[in-house]
Length: 319
Image 1 (cartoon, rainbow, N blue to C red):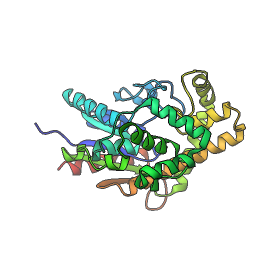
Image 2 (image 1 turned 90 degrees about the horizontal axis):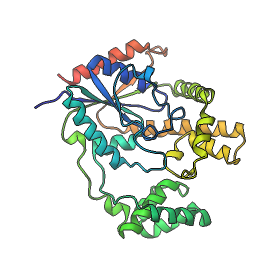
Image 3 (image 1 turned 180 degrees about the vertical axis):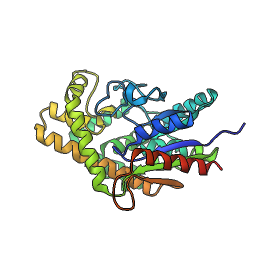
Image 4 (image 1 turned 45 degrees about the vertical axis):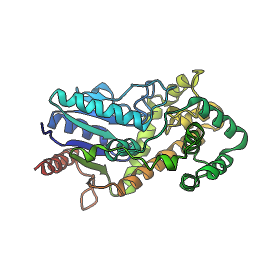
């Protein structure tokens, strides 16, 4: 049985993915699969820009609120769960629409991923303790001794990726670069996917949207949201959930490591850096249709125009 191509909507943070995905789901009789590493966690609402019931407009959303913030959730977990969601959506006669900004999740699902050992929390905790004593640059040097190829790609302070690479080595006796030689097959190898990326060509426009979104998050109660998480004894700032942009900065403010203005500034800078990384990923993404949200004259496109162009791209791709 042949299926209509899956629709994948990518883009940097604050580019308008959620509203566009809902509009496309309504027009194409679809359901949305969230591709967002923060939205999987319960309790991360304001800072993760989790869509409200009003914003969802009756469209079913999947892979939101499926993990407690104390739990780990990997790209491999996402790939497995997204494929199950795709199958279930199709069984209901609907179109699966992938929408989000976690590029590693998109890559794992669409392009395939490398086989990796499961997380070993005991080893991970030991690595974290060593890092607290020695510092991440010293841990980076340890990694270089056993996996020079992976270490060369990482900044000496990139704690999350250094930790994972060391964990892989210590748990399996095999380096991450060795594991990466055995790749799994991605969704694109099995079926058609129409891939679109929404973003304004003028970076300053995106920065202004980021500024406004962050202002709204603080106005809606982001600090109180993080305070509730901060009171939990089973959470800490090094967990993947609490490393999310905005949450980490507010957490460190609550730990009195930043004053209020410094925290706000660092949250803004971190969000802009996230958008920059996302755009870097997207520029090298294969077979991607770009949706510029600006006219040739430099004005902002209307939302209806963006929806029309999106539907046109999808329709032409299915011919």
